[in-house]
Image 1 (cartoon, rainbow, N blue to C red):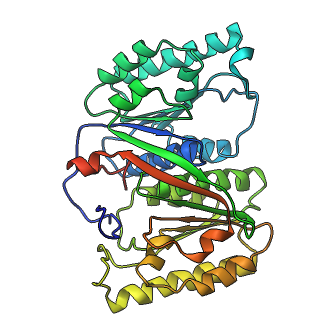
Image 2 (image 1 turned 30 degrees about the vertical axis):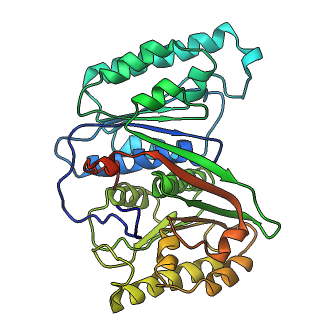
Length: 374
């Protein structure tokens, strides 16, 4: 990765770190819990093909069992097929509440969840522990902050910890190895409902898109396979992306629910070094995406890394604008990727979340990790 050019991490084999990092996703923008779900999908995918397994705990605060969430059916399907790879625990109420409305039940549920987290962290059984919505729990004073910090600081070295939610405490941000803030941008007058853009230098763009895929797949399962999903990934040719195996497993169980294609060479594309194949692969992906959006067959179309593809001038932006303007009302389009030159279709987004990088281990020379970063 670099701050001076556009380049996407490929799945080519390379050195990778063995020491787990502490990630914090916070901010007012959308994408925090989605990013956590995306890491879950990648981790399960890696575990499917790993002899040692890659077990993940998804612990969700403030998301009680009294409510059904879109992703539940997809997670349940993965648990059924691969029960050794994922555990999910929910705590708290199913509805939003403020500081003045805290009850003894809320405190009890937060402590119950934290006791599960402490046990999981100490056990050494998990490679990834996701603490979804832990930040607002800490902000509300439902857990002892110092105990949380001490536990995370003394975690087993291989363990990766993902913490999400608004209002992350300053001390937690200082302890973290990665801090990505989801910053919302106001929609313009031209915005269309159902278009979401995730961009910026921070981590969380593609993982948010994968989380959206999990949400959409879950909706499709609950609606008797009526919610079809297309995931198009540009600049990610070749094989070895860890999410592929989990998506393939879901597709095997629900063949009409999701289609997934990769476009591009198995190499990083830099500005000024584009090859003819890069243009051909970009156009191939766009033709598939355009036809899918126009058809109305797919209810969710995810265009992963479309932004850098346009920024590298591998695709023109005008046909994209035209296609988005004419999309069916009930088709949701998710667009991801960093870019230096803001394309005009950004004005069409009803949700525009910028991942602001405050801290990232990759910029400190720390290697990336399969099942988390790609």
